Length: 153
Image (tube, rainbow, N blue to C red):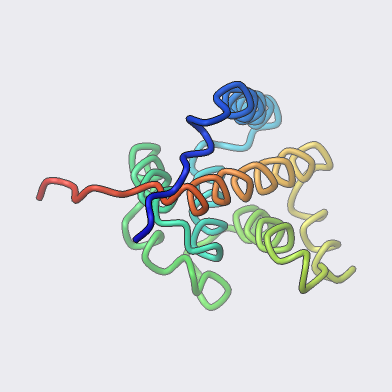
C-alpha cells in the first residue's frame, strides 16, 4: 500500500478547527438532551456506511464506554429490522443515513415527518451537524489511510 499523506497532520490547523466543531456539537447535543449513546450510534452508523476503519474502531469503543451494548452495535447495519432501537434512535439513524447518502438519495417527506415527530427541531439540527461532521472525519481517515492496531484480547 502506498504511504498516504495524513491530512490531519499535514494541515493541523484545519483538523483542530474540525475538532472544535465536534466539541461544539457534543455540547449542543447535551443542551438538547441527546445522550452520548445516540450520538455514538450516529457516528458508528455513518462510519459503517462509509466503511471507515479508523472511525468504526474509535466510535464503537466510545459507544461501549458510553453504555451501548455490543449486541446493538452488531445489529446496527440492520437497525430497521430490529426492535432494539427506540423511536428517537431510529429517527436519528434515519437522519444520519440521509446526510451520508445525500449524493444518491434524498430523505422523503414521510420519513422526515416521522423524524420530526420523534425529535425536536433543535435535536434534528444537532443530528444533521453531527452526521455532516462524522462524514468529514471519515473522509480524512479514509483518504489518510489511518491504521487500526489490534486491540489486546
